[in-house]
Image (cartoon, rainbow, N blue to C red; front, side, top):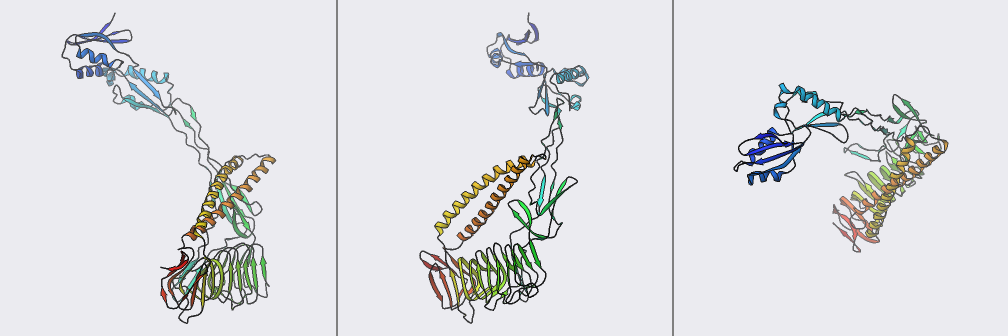
Length: 529
């Protein structure tokens, strides 16, 4: 038999088992009033048939019909990561009053236990103001703190960037080309990864953290050694030399430092490594290196016989006055304060601080960097462009500027091909890096695994070198494509008579002074702007 729960002159609400019925006896009862009664007095009823409620009002007298069923008084839900638990109460308002809450709190604790919520319960929620139908954060766990990856810091080698200082009275040309270290000098370090801190869920379960990764520390074991102290692995130089990178592998290459001059006390020098000369190269002496070379004497070099680097750059701090005898050759770039009466053969670019005088240069590009830089006399033979503030002089010394030029369309095709190769090589090195990490995270490798690890590191270094070379070539190609036309001579200030400008086989004699002019090849002609 149904139990009558509520009655007024319009409606009746009763219960039979787990179901709730509603019946209307008279017309005219507002739906809003019925909704308020259900919300305030029957929060534990889950409405299952909203249409029945509407019909009871609009079709009165009507019913009885089922409109809802009993729901749980206390609903507890736990988030998927078990870090938070929520509680919603569906009880009458009188049970929520502080003076009547003792039994309700016991019921809540039991509901939490039944849901497995045993940790991080917010008891202050139970003591505060509670409302029916409102979801409360009733418990909160402690999230795990994942470990941090190891931090690697290595000796930094920046690309050569010459600095020109010209105050009018004193000028300097500075460059840090060779990175010299002494035996025992710091080369890098790696902080150990941290294991992280475990967390705890609202169900009392331990949440394990994700430990940090041990990143590989790549170095040449013949020239670098490691020491581990207080959670940090340090790298030090085994010998005095010059720092270099092969891929991401740091090492120390053979380095010869001549503290004085190259003269009768040293004889001619030919060194298979990096070479630094603190003084000068005396007349008629020669000096060669396999890698980068720097000659740091403040007063430069005179009539030396030959200066050359087989695979590197050359930096001459004080310039060269070759007296028509000196020949300088280098694989990469030449950085020099000034050039006078010398022959230069350079596969890279020639960067001159202040002036070229009566100099014959064959290079990819020739740039005289100072705001008052000059090219006077001689022959400049470049592939892409020549740039200087002044070319020629008021005495009208014969000066020839020749730019062989390039095919812009072919250059664009070459650039696209190299960009595609770079993208593919980076993909390969990403895959290889994953394999290397597997080995680097293990401290107990078999001999076969160590051999595989070394092989992977060598492959990685080869790919890294390939990427470095491709990036260098792409940078040069992009730089070339910025050149006006298909070859250019850029005069930043003034060009004088008796200068001949040749670009891609076409020539133009300068017969009168011109200012801030760029000569460039386009549409089978030399044009200016």
